[in-house]
Image 1: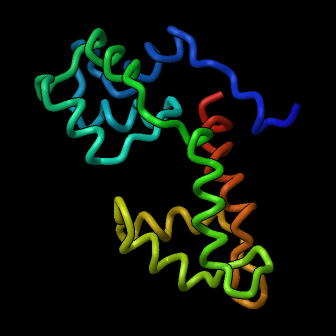
Image 2: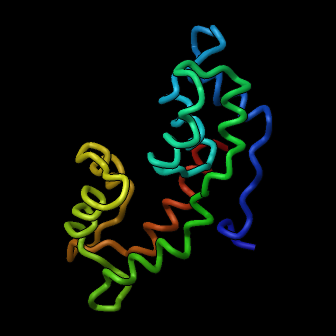
Length: 154
């Protein structure tokens, strides 16, 4: 089976290690923003609206028990969003050749959904291949988005 088909499950020790990475002082608490980053680093993909809705009941300082509860929420994963993401990019593929212009991708990332800052877009684009015609092969981009995070935390 391909790497896209089989993704390993996050273990309790990985959840704890992630929490600890955001708590270098070891005081047992992290900020709600750091908790969101940690949940995403562990492979969940809540939108800002989903995160705010599910995290609003918790204090601004999050302990490990709360972090585990937040991680256990049924947030979507990149893998669960794979098909919809490819379909959305295909709608932008005017030439039906599996590519979209880099400028169009940057514009979309800055204006649609949970908008990214120009700095965040530049950071993302460091890992995105752009061909000689200034086009991005969107299936490769989706593959990177789906598998990239898992590679970084293993």
